[in-house]
Image (cartoon, rainbow, N blue to C red; front, side, top):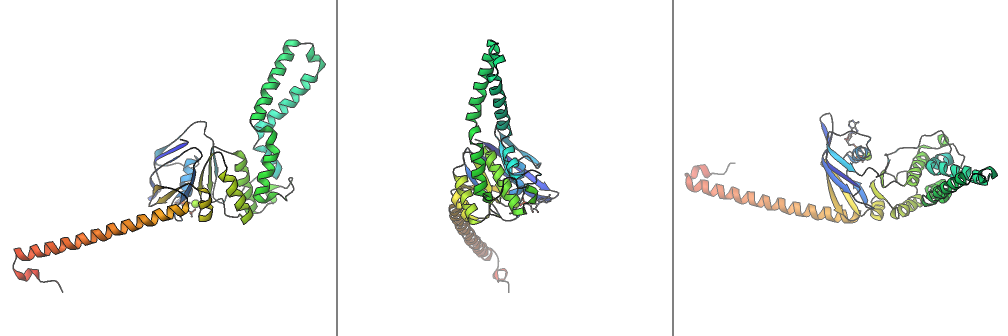
Length: 296
Ligand SMILES: Nc1ncnc2c1ncn2[C@@H]1O[C@H](COP(=O)(O)OP(=O)(O)OP(=O)(O)O)[C@@H](O)[C@H]1O
Ligand SMILES: [Mg+2]
């Protein structure tokens, strides 16, 4: 299990937003989080992301679990260029690449060849660092950046475009591109499909479907949820309920639930009417007939 949310309660003043929220996220799970406007979806994601406090309950996750969170309508604010911002995601690999270049220079230096022990050490460090670099995908950085930028509609943009000059919608798409490149273990996206045109939306669906981590996504787009989600969690009346399947399946289960609640209600009404009749009858037999007169 990746994440366990237990009995979370959150209120703003006297307004209870989330009452008793419990849910879990499993590895590679694709969860669609739904609910009416104001139900508390964004509030719950913020709490899980650690950006908002809560009144009681607990959130458990393994220490090494990396969570990536894209807030609703959040554009990327940065003084950098598109290219610099995307490359910054891989800062740890780019540092390693620089170190590898330095080690190569040392290895080529004839001075070092006169110190066999030192030479061995440098060679060994070089071997270890280059293995790590390859395992972490260091050789694919540019391909990954180009593919995500292209998919998110930035294919035609010069890479030295300043982010500050982009429109609000473009900044949102770029924020999404960056979080995809970060590839966290749990990807939490709050309404990611706003501002996306059809080709970008289609690309995003495909990318998320083959994503190796878990996904928790808030969306009002039922087609998007149908294409992606394998579980739906609904926040209703301050509580969370889990439905297995995509959005269409959730709608079927909801309507079956509604039908059965309606039947239950009708049955109760029937029983109440019978009970009233029974009481009325009893009343009439125990008292004189005047008290049995029906009220006008
Ligand atoms: N800082 C705040 N102070 C007081 N109330 C707040 C605050 N932030 C959110 N709320 C209230 O909490 C409730 C839940 O808000 P939230 O943004 O989580 O809803 P949502 O399910 O994401 O809605 P939407 O689908 O419109 O994005 C709303 O009634 C909102 O007005
Ligand atoms: Mg919201």
